[in-house]
Amino acid sequence: MEKHLKVSAIKDGTVLDHIPSDQLFKVIDILNLSNCINQITFGTNLDSKLLGKKAIIKIADRFFLDDEINKIALIAPQAKINIIHDFQVVEKRELSVPSEIKGIVKCMNPVCITNHQPVDTLFSTIYENNELKLLCHYCEKITDRQNLKIISKG
Amino acid sequence: MSKNLISIQDFSKDEILEILKMAAEFEENTCQPIFKDKVIASIFFEPSTRTRLSFETAANRLGARVIGFTDSINTSVAKGETLKDTIKMISNYADLIVMRHPLEGSARYASEISKVPVINAGDGANQHPTQTLLDLYSVYKTQGTLENLSISVVGDLKYGRTVHSLLQAMSHFNPVFLLTSPAELALPREYKEYLINKGIRFMETTNLTDVIPNSDIIYMTRVQRERFTDPIEYERVKNIYSLNASMIKGSKPNMKILHPLPRVNEIAIDVDESSHAYYFEQAHNGIYVRMAIITKLLKSL
Ligand SMILES: [Zn+2]
Image (cartoon, rainbow over all chains, first blue to last red; front, side, top):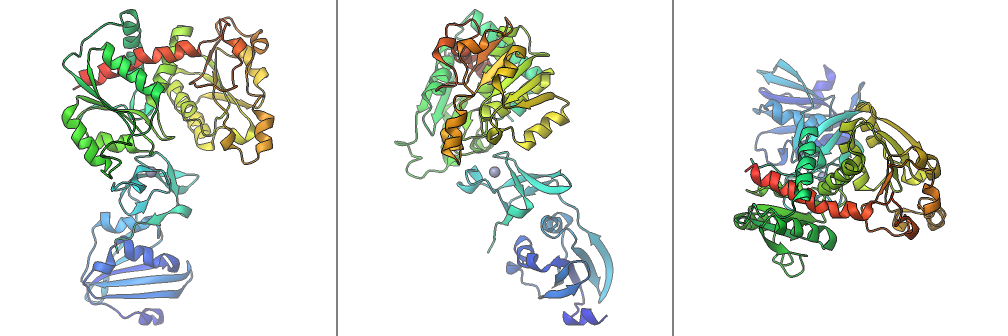
C-alpha cells in the first residue's frame, strides 16, 4: 500500500496507472488534460516492476468513454484504467487499440497533404511483425511507433 | 457518394476489366461525343504536359468542354487558397475533376470534399492510377489476356510508383514477376509481403539478360541519378539496365517492351524499329483508357 501514498487518493474518478514515464506528457496531450478543469494529480518516475519507471494520473470526477481512453493505447499499451467510487476501485479496464485513429497523430511523411493543409489526419491501425503501425488514409504511407508524434492541442 | 479513381486499389478486378473493355470500344470508334452537356475540370497544380494533353484529348473526344489550369502559378492557389476551397469552388462548376497535385494524399482529400467524381492524375510520388490502367490495357492488347503472364519489371523498383501500382493491379491475374534491379533499388519489403500474401510468384535478380527469354512483357523504368547516394554506383548501373536490339534477339515472339516514358537511356534507339517495341503505342492507348474512365465515372452519377 505504501506506493499509493505517493500520489494522493481520489474519492471518485479515474486513475490511469502503468503509463511509461517518458509517455506521460503525450498521454496528457492526447486526453487534452491541459484543458480539463477537474482536479488532477500526477506522479512520475515511480518505481514499477513492469516498466522500470512509471507514471500515474488521477483525475477526480472524470470518467472516459472507451473511444476516448483507447487512444492512449498507441503510446501506453500497458496502461491500466481504474474507475474509482468512494475511494474504492469499482472497475478495471484494459485498453484496446482502435482500428481507426482520427487526429491526434502526425503523419511522418513530410510530403503528405495532412502536413501542408488544414486536414485532420486519419490512420488505420495495422500490425506488421507484431508491431503496431499506422497506415495513412491519405498518402498511404506507414508511420511506425518510433516516429509517432502527437499533435499537441495546447 | 460519387465514385472516384484515386488509387488503383479502388477498382476491383471486374471494374478493371470493364474499363479495358470500354477502352477497346473507344479505340474502335474514337468519335463518341456522348458528354456534350458535361464540363470537365482539368486542374494541374504542377505541370505535366503529357498527362494533361492525354486527359484533355480524351475529354474532347467525348464531346465534353474542358476548363482548368495547367499549373498553379497564376491562380488563387498561389495567393494561398486552401485545396479545400479550390475544390469546393471547382466542383460547383464541373461535372468531373481531373487533378494533379505535388502532395501525396491530395487526391483522396479532394475526393472527400468534391461533390463530383475526382480522377487522380498523380499525387506526388503516391498514385497515378490512369497510368496503371493504360499499362494494363497495353498488356491486354498485345497479349490477348492478362492471365498467367511472365512480367519483367526492370530498373527502379524501390521508388517507381508505376511499378508498385502495376504489381498491385496485375496481382488479380496470376502473373509471375521477374523483378530486375540493382540491389539498392530493389522492391521494398512491404510490396514483397503484399505479393507473398496474395500467393503471387516472383523472383529477384540483378541480371537483365537472364530474364529476357522468359518474358511476355518487359516493363522498363528510369533509373534516376538522384536516387543514388554514390554517384559512381549510378554510373556503374545506368547502362546495365538498358535494353538494345541485340539483347532482345532470343525473346519470345509475343514479347513486348513497355515504358511509362519519357525514356532517357533505358531503351536504345535501335529497339524502336523492333516488333517488340510498344512504348509509343502504350502512351497512345492512354487516350482510350482515359475516355473509358471518364465515361465510367460520369455514368455512375
Ligand atoms: Zn500521410
